[in-house]
Image (cartoon, rainbow, N blue to C red; front, side, top):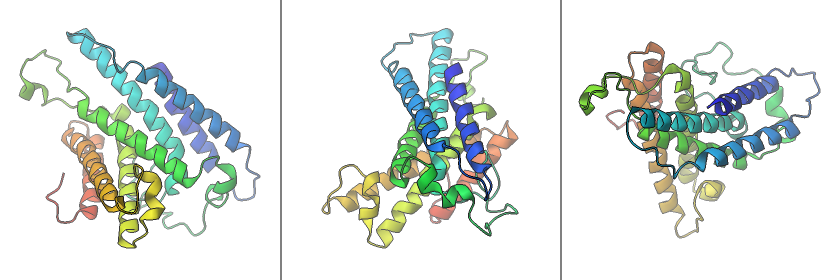
Length: 269
């Protein structure tokens, strides 16, 4: 858990360093540092994933251990998404209000009069391509979605009633930002995939699909689109229901608004 927290901290610090470079400065050697940081994240992912086959047993202590393990996985994948989000999506705002350092449509500095230096120099300063970072964001965001689906509800009174335990929040503000960033990635990839479908340029999204061919590309794209949509629904529903934390509930409503913009004929999350 401590390593996962440290990974998230290091990811945030790296992105803040990149953002703070002004127009006249010479970019430091971010490429080597970013590559090293991502390699550390990959090692941590492998370390925690080795416990996938671990049997946690039964009882309160086993449940706590399993949930702490899942939260650790979530934080590591959130850290990796945080690092690659800028390269994959160039910080294009999706949500109306500001949450978890995500750019907001309603912010005073949107739209930017000129692109920040990290955007104009991204090909030089970032050691991953847009496609590589997009794939990383896709995979890590889907892992966070799976964790949210399996994360247990709090049950402080030890009740055996599932309806009783579901009255308690499933999320705490500490790791709600992991969900918010994952939803951002899923929705941005969904819009990108739709644009490729609408313009008959699915070849531009082949890197997101699983071994596509001209004969299967439409079905592959539709399958991924449904997976992305389902992931947003899982996380949005979880955050929206946790109204005991006003900020977390607001995140859920923000996700639902972006979801309804993508699926206007839907009844909501």
